[in-house]
Amino acid sequence: MDIKNYVACDNILGIRTSLKKFDWSFGQPPRTATEDEINQCKIVIKLTIDSLKDEAKRFENSQKYHYWRGDCGRDELYYQRNLFAGSKLRLLLRGIKNGRPEIIINKNYLRFVIGRFINLHSIGYQLTDLACAMLLSRELCPLHCSSFSIDGSTVAVIAPGNTGKTLSTMRAVLHLGASFISEDLAVIDGESIYACPWTSTFRYYDELSMSWFLRMRMKLIKIIPPLELIPIRGGDRKINAYIEDERILSKEKLTHTIILARCPGGVKVLDKKEALFMVRNLNRYEFMYMKSPMMTAYSYFNPELDIFALEEKEKSILSKLVENTTCLLAQSEDPTKFADMIIGSLKK
Image 1 (cartoon, rainbow, N blue to C red):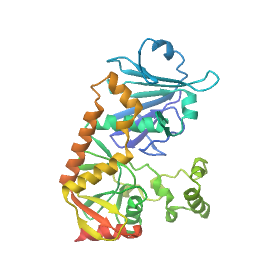
Image 2: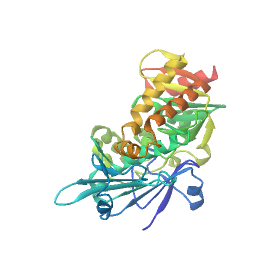
Image 3: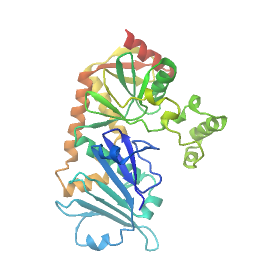
Image 4: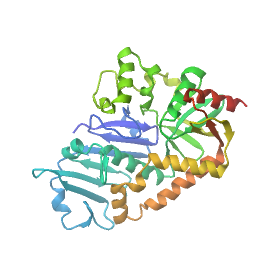
């Protein structure tokens, strides 16, 4: 089995996998990593494919939790569900207690579970939920944000989807001289921000495309989203195809939390309590580990991984973020103005 190493967040989060392609919130396509780089990561998740045919026997006397099977204190969780013509969907989770989390799926699971429907979650969602739980258990919090640094200030830009957080950071970096940290997702400890720069929502912005064909494709994807599932040459460019490596920062101390709103109003200082509510609300919309069937079932058999306690850790880290930074609300009906508004407020 050919296992390759990838790093989503330097020194923080990596993945070992035999899959040629996998989608999760922490970056696609990811950055390939050396053995030394992956060993430096605090959290490394392993993802492989196997038939898992023998697991049904191993777990036949275990307790049931809907389609999951496990036992109290057992660091393994098994999922099996009938598909059609005797075929099965199978998944095995193990290794959380020893700090080596691993997910094994069969080919049917990879092929047929491609989204999130009731309690059927694709491997990308399962990986994201597991990564969130592992991060929070180590006092680190995933944050749905874009981020850049300029003139000694580092900002986390937080907003509802399609409001302009990615556009704001990309415009600040490409046109206003800022350094890039993240465009869709990062990891924080309440004081510093750690980049997850290998996400790729930035490719939806026409000005970044390197050809007429790619520009037209991005426009068509906005109209017909399934077109994105069709791979093309050059469609998997990483952020460093557009921004020089030396302008991509991996860790910075945060100074500002900026929340965007698509409405008139300009920039104003936010009350800390109001800012915390908005940040928690927007983060919860992106990260669903509290509603993850896999993490919920594992926690039932292994209550030391308490998902309710993880939620409190998330609140604590986000509270620290708000307390340690200047919180601003930037309001404009034109999302292309956010970058100038933010940088203008920093200069003031």
